[in-house]
Length: 251
Ligand code: FPP
Image (tube, rainbow, N blue to C red):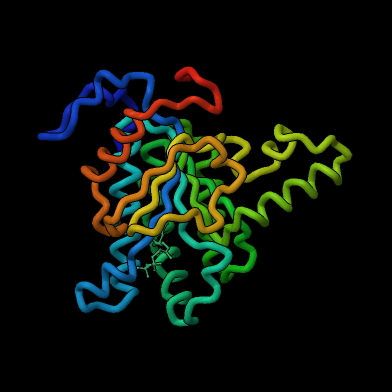
């Protein structure tokens, strides 16, 4: 269960760090590049699908914990526009997993008043998956306690191209604000913190426009092993940084 209805920054879980001195500083929006499912499964002598299943289960655990810590928006890179180049069998498995995930997740997030959003072009997905994603989005559209934004068939460059085209079509000046307003994230804003698991040090076409001033946290931990303690480490690392936005003073 999410614990979204109350301020959680004071509560200390077991040996977990005390976040009480960070009241008001917890990032509003955290985005995660969930990488390493395949390697995690490999290390266990299991097929890649086993890793993706564990990765999907971890989504529930980490979104719950992020909200518990006071984060309001969690974005998750689940399927990039480049992932189509994977073997057909793996793609089919990912779609089946996503279908199952959305079916279960709808009830949970509805109860917790959490809104599901999607970034990306899902029209290329199978119809039954599109339908369950649309149900999840519409059923939770009025939810107020937090947002889980799932990037599906998403590519950051294409998102910028689409946004600029829309600005031009509407006859508006091409400004940062006007482009920003046409991005999938127009309602939720830019992520203050972007986490990537599994030791890869790149963005892989994720939130290119939105990440201009994001703080990055890279960890070798593989996504299925990225638990609450690892999330807290990322959060504490972020909280210890001075954000200057090109200036010389802390924000
Ligand atoms: C990277 O692992 C991860 C993905 C391709 C997508 C992430 C998908 C999930 C966590 C499961 C479904 C998502 C949701 C929202 C339910 P990889 O296969 O690239 O791992 P590797 O780099 O070790 O091969």
